[in-house]
Image (cartoon, rainbow, N blue to C red; front, side, top):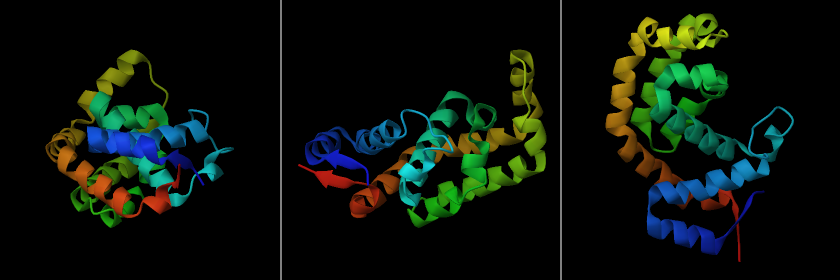
Length: 166
């Protein structure tokens, strides 16, 4: 089980929900040496994977949306796993619904979205997949509220996400 010092959690809580969640993310990334691979996936439990997937999802969405998320190799981690269902279980129901809608686009275009691209081809994908634009806009409208729901779930089930140590 991933261990986190109670002091680190308490300090993060004082700073806000983003910092609170980041304490967990940092611990998970440290446990997998900064990169999730097939060889180290076993180091995290299902809920920890879900929170890490949320981190990748939210980071990639802020940086470049669904096209970037998929091109950076996170498509399968988000869409081929029960991430959307887990978000609903975390209370982030609207986020779960949004991910299901994006999954439909991903599934229908997976080969094209995941192919190796040049920078020019990658940039052209934003035009080719404008269908993601409305979903991305919706995400940014709901991001803060959905993040608060995720943070509340983690707080209420903290022993499932880490072992707290002195």
